[in-house]
Amino acid sequence: MPQQQYKSVLKFLIPSLLGAAFFLLPVAGENTVTIPLAIVVDYLRSALSEWLPTVAVIVILTGFVVTAIAALFPKLWTGSIPDRWNRLLRPGLFWILVRLVGAVIALAAFTGLGPEILSSAAVGGVLLNDLAPILLVLFLIAGFLIVLLTDYGLMEFIGVLAAPLFRSLFKVPGRGAIDATASWMGSATVGTLITIEQYQAGKYTGREAATVACNFSIASIGFCYVLAATAGVEQWFLPLYGTVFVCVVISAIILCRVPPLTMIPDTLIDGSERPADEHTSRGFRAAMSEATQRAETGPGVKAFFSQGLYSVASIYIGLLPSVFAIGGLGLLLAETTPIFEWLSAPLVPVLSGLGLPEAAQAAPAFIVGFADQFLTVIVGSNVESEQTRFVIAVAAITQVLYFSELGALLLQSRIPIGFGHLTLVFVLRTLITIPIAAAASHLLF
Image 1 (cartoon, rainbow, N blue to C red):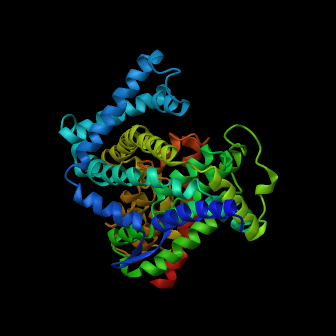
Image 2: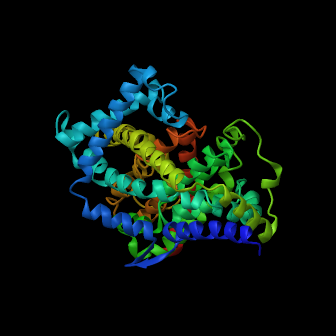
Image 3: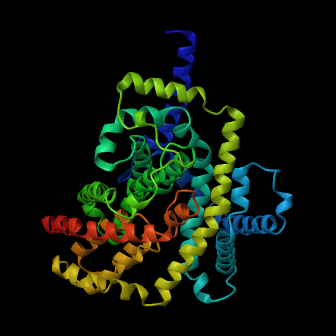
């Protein structure tokens, strides 16, 4: 092997294997399976638990102040910073207002000022103590190291090999296997972040990025166990997880072929068409060739840290306020209004027809997940029927698009997907999941 080719292979293998080991390597834990990333995140979150809520509020307030200054004094920024930083700091009026609402809710939840509900365990507690700490730590690490997965050839290598399967089943490139694995083994948010990064790098069309994000951003195995335990069905975890897998595959096969995902433009971020040679697999040799070519253009040390800094900043400035604003408003609606009971009323006869006990009491659990994934199992834990709680736990995992986190992340990304798209996908995934999970529950109970 020529020396230059040997160096290219090493430049592909070393970063890619490090990234795969950190984000994708299964590690046996107590009662579950996890990955090194999750272990590090859990350790840091535990060690810094006393400080992370305070840090989250400071980050959100600072982000809003910087955004406000950029909006009020645009001449200070125009032409002096790269375009991507300009887009982050000047996101448009709607997202400026979202960041303002997020800052207000974060400050109220932290200080106890304002309505008591904002600092309650059901709203402020979920945002400050459950969501914000894990997002702060997760993206501080993943924001830098995710480049190892995306920019040194691993996506190209897997993409070429997996192209026939993913194209035929899900109508997306084979590189979608990486996004899916990162979600299933690590974190749904990390998988979605990979998808967003790949779309911005011109590797997915808008339709493909939306399809991957809306179908494969499933909670990690470890968090699935947490959800199952909260619902009180952890003793059925293996059949539950098998049911989740079936639901995810069937949902993805269906949803990639129907609106709203088919209505999203099937063009790259610059408006161009995808090259035809990316639609088929060309074997191991072609996979290695594309991987090493990509590795040759991979970022050096300076670019690595520059790209990582922007990824972390975009989450801290863009996503965190959105989580508090969108997720907070959803939690407020769930806690203070009967809106989710009204919305879930049509589900009651469906659940009854499927033979699930306590249909009326369980129905709101399937809808409240639109606000937050954890709310589904919290509401469902009040249902006495173990069979019904099994179905609720499956739905909590497979509905995907809860707005306290993933929905906010997608809406503030450049993927051409809107609130209406996400709402309809959530409804369709719920309607597909419930009959499958109900059928599985009848085999178990």
